[in-house]
Length: 293
Image: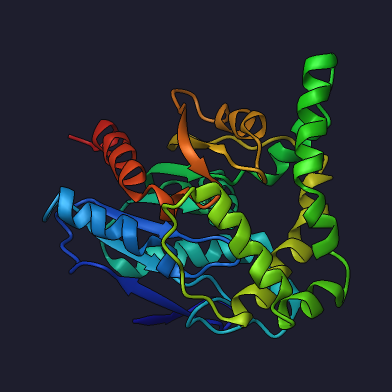
């Protein structure tokens, strides 16, 4: 099914199961350069391990998969992405949902669960390899001693690719030539250590998603606004071999909610495809803790 976002963009919503309003609903949000198919293996795990327990839904973020592309870069700004999440939740007719998100999906979801317009629609949140951008900015400014300075330096080194993504034209050339596509695949294989399940992607998934970085990174990281809070029960799963989002940064963001938890897990950045059974098990565990009686 598809729905029309507040600015006219068409969002493709994919239901892995039939929707039963009496069951908890998991809404999975993908990151860059993926589409909803990154959740296929996790959805299979949920269906096989917990048959009939959950409604499982994913959607293609604007510009990715079968969703349409905004006409301008401003269509990728976080307030619009938060609005999209709220619209998808409302379209399901199930009340609150349990968010499960990875990479830029987590960045969007953190913005959503700290936004009053969406916070009440979310019963729990499981984040993988994606921080709240304002907290990421605070983390990068947090160096007070040798230990924290080393952590900040480690994240800056891991984030050098972002500066390249902000350069006009160069990333597009690299992805259209397929050189950078092969490089991304190589990083996936290294992190997966033989357990990788390939996610189908189009060149548009790579290219359109660059606007997520260009529309949000600098303004959010440099924001002087007060750091937002949430009352949504949130857990952060930290892949130990993630070379793009360090454990220190993820733990810093994981401290946002009172009563949240941070768990280290095996795997690289794309742990969603290499260890879907771990993601399903820990998400189920967290949801079970936070289902209203």
